[in-house]
Image (cartoon, rainbow, N blue to C red; front, top):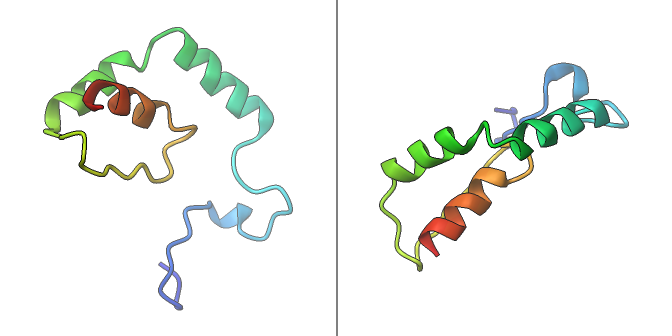
Amino acid sequence: MARLGYVNLLQPQDRRSPRPGDSAPAIAARRRFLSRGFEAGLTRAIGDLLSLAPTDALLDVGCGDGDHLAALAERFG
């Protein structure tokens, strides 16, 4: 939490970087991992913990490319 009240999710070494966040190789590795279905169990477990109606809002903060959010939106409408 910054002194001005906002939350910065970047790692300390990335805060002033001209290219903050995940590197291209890290993003490619995450996409390969997700494309093989390894995260399906985690997404299913998260969904099992939730009780959402189609009109409810769900916020995905700092969780990669939004794959879990997309799966939950598909499941709950």
